[in-house]
Length: 65
Image 1 (cartoon, rainbow, N blue to C red):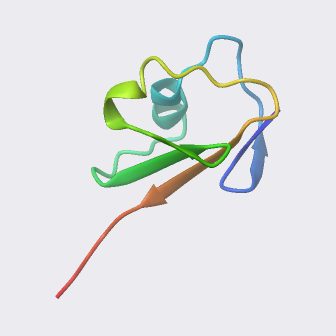
Image 2 (image 1 turned 180 degrees about the horizontal axis):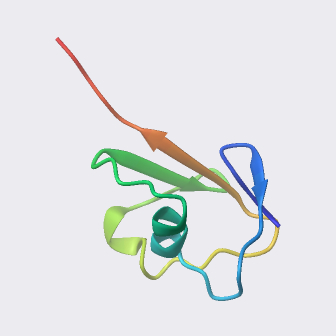
């Protein structure tokens, strides 16, 4: 089990951050991803593997004026 924004979810061995985003339909262009408190850069999403017990935060960044 992993947590995504405080919700428990199943994961599969070898799942990447990019896989998780697709599975959960996160398509917003301004996303910040943190795994166990560490920011994952956009170019690391396909290579960062999720492990059992990981705490993933998906944060939507938006601004206005």
